[in-house]
Length: 499
Image (cartoon, rainbow, N blue to C red; front, side, top):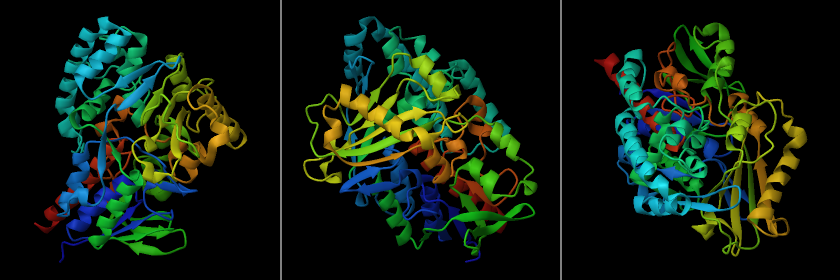
């Protein structure tokens, strides 16, 4: 019994749930604390007028990562929620509304390339060989910690040999000549908050993740995954304390001793795991005078991802005759300029880069009968930019809806029966994301792996980090893997001490 520890997990996002389940399955006394009224973190599900809107991630890949969590508890994932495969993965539209079907099968992709630029087929085949090499080299490290610089040195020869340090778009450009197709095969960094022109092509492994295991939809929405994980955690004896906000991680010397809540409640713990935003955790939950590393200035000077403006809406009519699929990406003409405005600009971009999610194409159960559910996401600068969201949010929402009505969803406005939006202040104030960055630190080479805040605090020996702001980074598979890494580090540390 002496090896069973009292563990507090701050936040019930995918990283928090992933680590908490694994730790509870090992017999530890685990409590998750969350400021909101139900679990999920970024994957929170809103229920409005009979519609179930997934608040955050919608693209599910690498189901084996979910399966491993349930297997760790002696359970089967399919007994808790269902994943339905999607093909095409994405439907990608150019600025004129002409589309590319992004399929799983290589023959289908080559047929699509043929429609756009037949001369690019050979280049694509060479490019995919490279992405497989990148994947084979780096995939084994996606669920391993990078606590020492020597871990980084192991992968650097491969990074250099494959040229995987160069920007994703320029990497694709070597193989693909058509300008639109270059956008098609370089957009994946956007899924983790990175600029395709800056994000190192090591992150092309995301593309290969999709090809290896497919892209899935969680029946009932991503909220069904959150419920499945939360149910499993409860079955293992775990406790979830909702409507409770952590005010401080209590520190004594080089150890965390527990947490204090906003209402003054003190919860002592042997181990603290933070699924709160990593920058926020250091900056707001640990007094600066107690920190030898990550001073406020150091944290503020790091590079942060874009933020998001997301409009959720439901319509009283179905749009089955539209040209839209389940996942749609609408790219702008002035792509490079727009990316610069989003990631480096100080004002709101003049063009739109949109991801349009239409899950009722696959699952009518999440909307009232005869209705359609949508989620449209626009990439916008984080709150380092000089944008008064209180003043312009409503106009910006209308701009997005007007664009969709004009180009994709006729008579949209007169058919909307449910509506909600989130903006950068939501990421800052509700999700506690520093600068309202939706994906924490940008995935640059010098903010990846060893250079990202570690899964075990470099200073406080029993404080651990999970989520987008630590290794391996943002995106559902990475965040779930961070939970696995932290849980294994904790188990290893307990065993060493008891040996």
